[in-house]
Image (tube, rainbow, N blue to C red):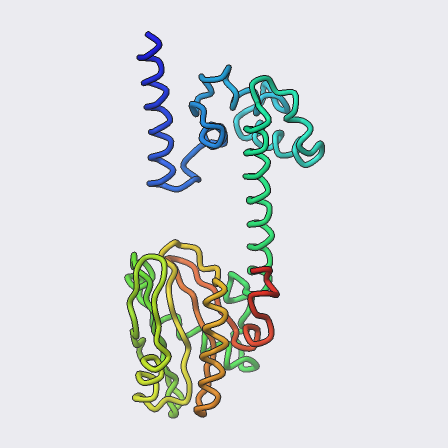
Length: 265
């Protein structure tokens, strides 16, 4: 009987693990997330329903969403002290929880810094009027990137040329990579750009993860390409990081004056 019960718990744990790996963390309830962190059954059936006890302490009798909000409110007001007298929550498990919350806090700070530097909504950054022709140019260049390119499962890198007669060219793919990175040779990039004899160009690459936040490498690359382009008499107008349905714009001047250290990276 005990062996059968243990097997069922193992099955439930495996199901939650499979769902989070396949569909992402948003597919799990907060209680299931706690169960995985504390290495308990997501339904709270092991160790006296530890995940349930932690959630119910500041919000017993509430709905799942209200209970989650009450938990965070209690953590914000009381700090880690409200976890100390939860039966079954050992010092090791309490330390694990606090470490996870600290990682989440630092990631939240990182996201806020990036979003403040690079607005998520291009329309809030670009003015669609004659006073900002550069903004309109970069905005129009997005139309050269197809939905299929945005949804690719591997990273790619390319550019859209801006010709001397004042028109945007078609997107030029320079390099393909794997799911997490693309290796780009500066010589290959500029060989392709110079072959078209443009006045300037807009850089493009994708993030298959679906999160268009620029990485430290993206910022460094933008700075390096902008510097080299200037030495060759070309203009690097900007760098788009695109995903399915969203994008971020890296202004070369922002990248020039604010490197990774300014973002705490």
